[in-house]
Length: 613
Image (cartoon, rainbow, N blue to C red):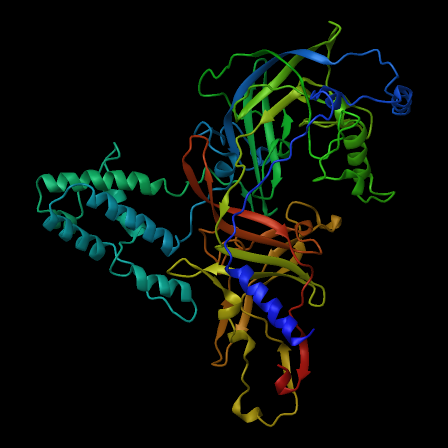
């Protein structure tokens, strides 16, 4: 391009940049080129009707069926609420009725009743939150400014955070202590100090001496007494209290049972093997025994007698009912890849593409925590024909059924029972307070329980033991062996937070059956100063009795509960909404699949160079 042309082009571009412009939009509308009538275009007339008939024949739309679509359904069912709860498996109880309790609260999520446990030590952040709420209630009580200042100072002096925190081993706890010290009272210490002062009615009968002195007595003391009573009631309910013990340390899972009283029979719903977190109707097995005792009062509910209109079941990717309609491309079932052995995938695709339009939905009103026994279901189709619908099950082996909590070949009345549990649909989960990995070490012929995360003392904050426990990995040789070529060791060192489980004969079975269990044993360590130290777990997950003597505790686990891939057990706070709109906070455990086998490097009777220890 010539220089003059470049100058001209640059001038044109500069002019375009500085010239103002107005953006406008035009709408395109259909206009009939003949009479102005749009009807002929909207009729979409077909030039070849015979071609359309041929396409209908190819899609088998001309085949007649002697059946009609359902237009009305009549449902009759009995229902009853869950009234009894048994923590733990009732099979291991001599008298399940005596060890059962009434359901504590209507609508309380089952997970809370099953999983809640008392905190061994509350994290400092929880104690600070309850202490801050105490300050908020006190400031809103209307105390005189001078009295309020004196009371707050008394709070901080009476219930201060105690104990020294090592910043090297517990950096989070140390950082939180720097924030809370001298600013917020310890809520756990305040609750422990006020609880003995309550009268039988639950109200504080007096104040601690330091607080009574700060108020100066009189009306201010009575006001503060009411404030502390209100706060103590709230603080004791801040973390859900346990209802018995449903955790089975032998199986590393929860077991419990519920009972509802239907007319003519009691329905016992057992959940053995609950591994934490998700619960639904399929987690339970229905039976008639053992009974969990009578309900506290008459809990009969009105039966269900409803007339509803069936509606077709819809789901993403469902084939369209109309010939010329396109399906939603969000879910493309035709792209599902399945081999000849992927029977579950093949059955799902066949059901979705071929039989999906054969299912209808009938809305039935039930409350969470209720059991329903369907007595009859009658459907009226478009021809006025009334049809009685029975259960969808095939009792022949292997059989098939749906929404059934009894074996597939069961034909008793319990097979028609449906349970709608009051479960948590979604819960917020905090970081693990404690985490333990159990895995097999084939070279050492042991199972190791590795405490990855434990609660620090006294802050209660989670700390990783692998970052703080390194003493057992450092072994120093005596001074007279510095020039040794090899050093004999009876046993190579193992990290202190690795705790061994050995295989022992089962307790309740004869030795001739060769049944074994895994028992935790303490690890003995010989220190450089010629003293002996016995390593025990710092947390509670590797203990059978968390409140007992750790030196005498010997946790036993079923051999099959630690598979080749291992398991990971965690304890953490969970927060969820209750049916009433409030929130509930509790500590729960969960069990998940591990990451396979591991190796501790443990060897016996070995000689290694000094650098190889």
